[in-house]
Length: 374
Image (tube, rainbow, N blue to C red; front, side):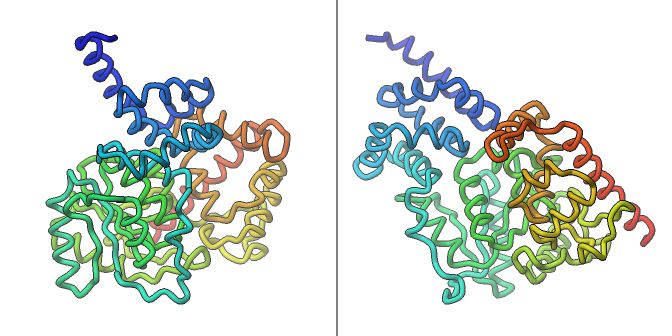
């Protein structure tokens, strides 16, 4: 039996590992080395391991390894129903949610769904004061707003899903703490999956979205509540909320430079190699899968055209941002594995670099357009 001192040391080590688990590289490394089983074996003695596995379970390879372990899955399902440890039960609910075991219980046909809310505010409780102020302003403006002020008990994942199903828009309150929160990640990803309108706002000074959060917000413009006085920022938020949202087919609205707080990347591209009239629109976010294929083949990116068969314009914009902002070695490894799995070919570095260069030119193009209009 371990001494109390050794037990405490292990708990401290696991706490540090929990912090590291928020870095997407760590779950992937764990999956590649088949070490997840070691964490599974520690769960009974160290409940904090469930929180680590929850953070890991956003990774697709980790999900496969969890699903393939029938005894551990049965254990999770049983504990989710019977455990009296609320924190442990919430982590287990989060794991099961990421494994999509109960998503279908919440799906509502949007065509026949009369929404109970206009807006869901997704935030980290560290930003509770600022979010309460925003909430009050939105309520006063007549919006029906769902927000969790009291850190709900019971199955938080179910409550979150029901709220998103019953709303049209999700405001994502970006901060480092938000990016590190498993709850926030699950909430943002579910909103993205259910194709809700996402309106990002920045609440932490000098914070730059990265990792999964950057992937979610992609091309979206965000309102910086640090750069502007609160009344001005709220005006800009109201303006964003009023912009009509049409899934996949609607062009990004043109805004004046004054009201455009941040555009992470661009939405337009012009190239001498391919006629935009043959695609139909300069706005990449509008492109269908067929238009993406025309563009890729027009630039002689033949392997990428096969690899990106299922990608529309929004998808390749997100991919470009992921390549730019994540560790290139990790991105290359993931793309290589995907290429081998999908088309049984190693990824072409030449085509990948050409793709990245074209997207960079696309960014410069819009920047020059902005400059010429000012």
